Image 1 (tube, one colour):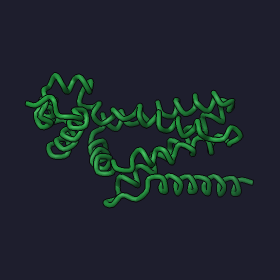
Image 2: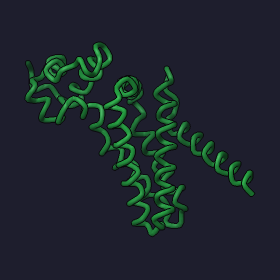
Image 3: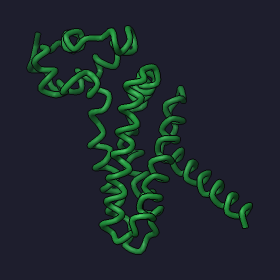
Image 4: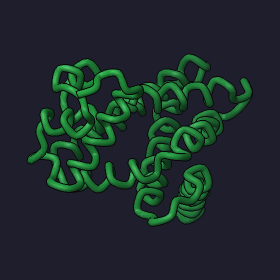
Length: 193
């Protein structure tokens, strides 16, 4: 086994996602992932704590990308505009990841434990965005609403994106979902007044 080929983490992730798709998440072992990647089991654990982390290892990168977009938002932007400022960088982050994201989404959808982990990841992401808004002086209540709405928009758009055979712009889907959310909120507000 050659341990000197570049991008061991990427090779492990590719091998894992292929094996999960072929034989199921539960039936796949770390040893099989390492073998398919041409690496050792020990090398696997240098990059991932367990096989689940192959599917969730990008959470920090997503948070960092979203926060960078929010940091670039104008100081006078409203809370939802600040959250939405992260949509462009997120779209760029996922621009060439559609095949992986599509397979990953199917694997997560088939496993209740992975679905739970996905919800935990989204909850953590919401807290990170809420904290970033609070640091900008947004009230706790407004920060919570904007962060939760932004994560919901991302989650819905990402689901639409991964269900498509041919990738379209994730950014466009997030913008469409945000517009739909605004129309739902406006229609609800109009109906109750």
